[in-house]
Amino acid sequence: MAPARHDPDHVAGERVERKYLMMPHVERGMAVGLFGGSFNPPHAGHQLVSEIALRRLHLDQMWWMVTPGNPLKSRSELASLSDRIAMSEKLNHDPRIKVTAFEETLGGAYTADTLAYVKARNPQVHFVWIMGADSLKTFHLWQKWRRIACTFPIAVIDRPGSTLSFLSSKMARTFDYARIDEDDAATLWKRPAPAWTFLHGPRSSLSSTALRAAASRTR
Image 1 (cartoon, rainbow, N blue to C red):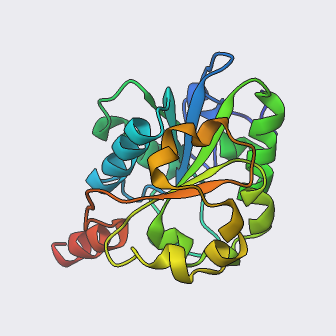
Image 2 (image 1 turned 135 degrees about the vertical axis):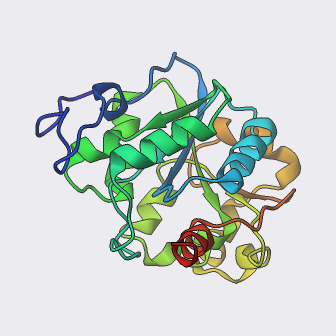
């Protein structure tokens, strides 16, 4: 991985351990899920998405990519990067899930640029982009969203109130020809992008937004 563009031990006035500013170690031929988000805070819903993806997609690892920020969301209630990393680590007990914040070293890169960076530095690793169905609704608002879909296969995990997103979203309509049946999900990581599937299964009603709202009411 290329060196950070600034002091890797000092991020926006806070200290973040150097290991989190590097991509996790992977071996050639591994299948790895990339699950990006603010994790503000992380919760059981994130764990459930990861569990489903690891099992149904036959992944070797899942990276929780804790992002510095989200351009589609307000930063006013965003906990510090180091706090969100610490909360994610505390929540996780599966050694296959790797918490990382290497995006911080890329200087505000969009997701499409981040994925291109990952791909260029891990040419012998098979990656799958993981996202909840609630994100599918607004996926077409992401910068270079078509490029994302053409970089790695995508697995969309069902979320409460978002089950029909895979039928109505612009992304689903645009890449309808590339959708594979969820019965074949275990082969997704072997397929060239664009390729995507929608995985039904247990759903958690938890959300980071709701948890923050509940916490503010108890203060």
